[in-house]
Length: 351
Image 1: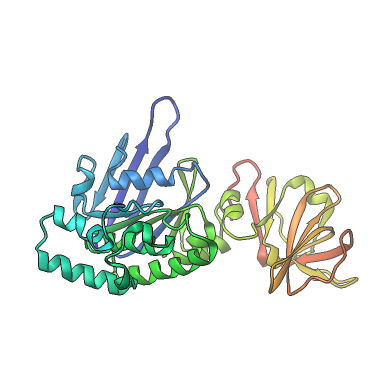
Image 2: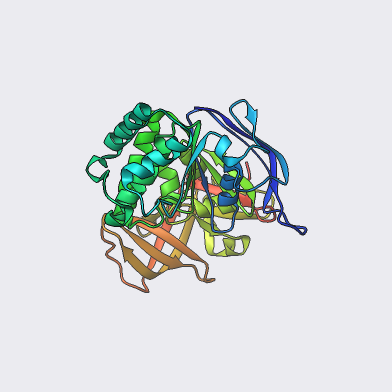
């Protein structure tokens, strides 16, 4: 396993706008780092630059002790798992697993040993003589992972490997990938647009926005202490409620709540809004009257989609089945320690 160091890495395809803006990032040996963000934020471009499939316009990329900017992809000692599996359709599973090793002139006995170990770890031993067309999507993805594992590379790179799978299989496979990565201890960089996938798998998350890093940290740190409104709205499902200054006339602050002196956006997560009884209030926090516009029952909890008198919307998460009527009005409150403030101009967290 090797560290991966990005130092002021840039990518420009021509013109005035960079696709990647001077990204600096240090990935520790054995770490599972996830790049997450919306479509077009640059996460796949950054991964392809690490792999050598895209060139750098500026900055340096180091894998282990080597600067690899001018090193061909095949010589970077990395293995990549793609979204579309990238298996050879005319080869058996065994042949797919062996192909890269044969090209590297690995001894036959070593090839067989690595294939046997990977097949056992991935539970694909019964499928070794089948062709990819005879496998399910989950089985194909396991073979793609096996092809990476047998290489015993310095780093694994995953480019949205689960996006073609159904929801149930995605959950199963993300557990498998994380389990294998921990067992192997291989440095891994994983790209996804699915924030739930990112939060459950990552040792650390990197949230990207328009080619720039918004925030780096553990899942819980980004969830509890978002550095910007972008992170607050992207990490967490449902997203954090964000109320601009104009909404202040429609909610009341408890006497113990210290409001910023500068114009601000108020953030509060759906689970931190609690429904109050008549005459009840959070003395030091947030209090508002909301109208229920829609109710989503999702099993163990319900989401109340509500609005203030000015039309600004909020989501309230409640346990179990919500026994409320559409159009009904409710009082909600939140404690001061559960509230977040962001600058209205720069959208960054106010300390």
